[in-house]
Length: 324
Image (cartoon, rainbow, N blue to C red; front, side, top):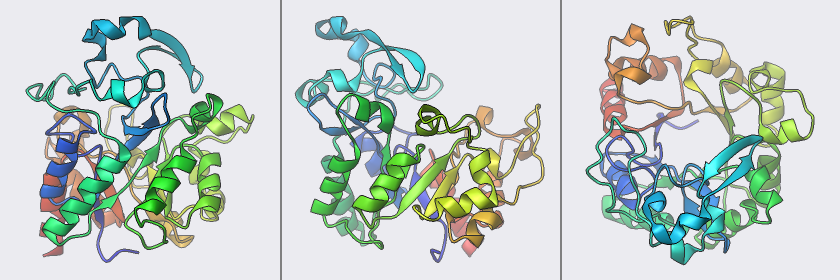
């Protein structure tokens, strides 16, 4: 276990800048993040880019670009019909003509149109440059998005991801990298491809899509049992659960007693990195009285090994206060 919890910049400093942009990642590092998190999807020509979804109209200006109007389509992604514009229908040169925008309407829109969509190598270059500038090792925490879907269209994410990471010197178990996924099969595949640490993400609801495709009845909730955590420990180094799997809430959003998930995961040697911590009132349980620092304090005291946050500065401030 790390000497202290790590601060993972969720999509960068996405509370302050449009998510998954070099500007968001760099600001997160400047605010004290230990790791920056790029969610990865593929372009038509097999380039890994940072977007939370392969449908890109929510985070770029593609819908306003007349030259791409004919690319709008509907697809079935992980069993759900999604309509929009998809990264895998664009080349990297086309993607680079787009500009990022803020996804959430209640956050600042003043940076819309300023930043391009970064590739994984560009993000690695930034992490290395900032590591040299700051004297701190800045890690990267990539997530493979919709791996079963991307496999089905011949754009597998795992092999190019490992190739890029290994080529950049990230090839050992102690490298400053965690690879994460909400699916299980691709993590088991990655476990055979690399010694890099792997994190099994666990949603509060539903089931991993690869299990659904295989007819496996296990849900994410099932995977939090001690027996299933032991199975996860056979291929992964940690779990990334929804924070409500650690501190549940009732139907009114009021917090309930913490579960045993952290203790159970630690018992089989798994790290615990819950998501997602945000400052805005709509994301906070009433028990915190609109004080996001109270939520961080609770989870740090419960013993998490790290956490995902949109507001790196708040997380760092609370952690420093607790440690002092």
